[in-house]
Length: 164
Image 1: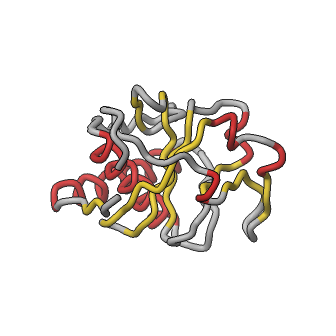
Image 2 (image 1 turned 90 degrees about the vertical axis):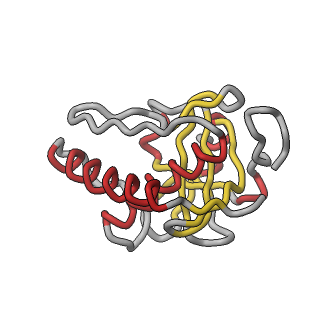
C-alpha cells in the first residue's frame, strides 16, 4: 500500500488537535501514557496525524472533538473493524502497542500506522481480543504493555472489501 501524505489543511488540523487535546487531558489530570522517550506534544501530534491518515485511507471522518472530562475508547469507526484505536510508530518494523490499562475498557480493534508527520502507511490491524492477551505483555524498556509484531497483524482492507 502506498504512503498517505496529509495535505496542508490536514496537517494544520492535526497540529491544532494535538495541542488542544494535550491541554485538555492535562487540565483533566489524565497522565501522559506515552511509551517512548519523545515529548508529550510529539506523541499527541503523531497520534492524531496517524488517526487522520487512517480515516483518510478508510474514507471515514476523524473524531475532532475536544471535550474535557471524557475520553473516547476509539479514534474511528469502520464497518469492517468496528471501533478502532489507531496506534502510530515511526519505526518501519515497529510493533502495535497498547498499555495494559486498555484491557478493562477497549475498542473492537487496533490499527497500526507507520511513519512520521505528515506521511503514514497503514500496515495492519487486529481485533482487540487478539492483542489484549497475557501472552502479548512485554516490557520494551518503558514499562509493560501489550505488543504485537507486524507479522501478527491482519492485512489492511478498505471499506469496499478491496485489498490495498
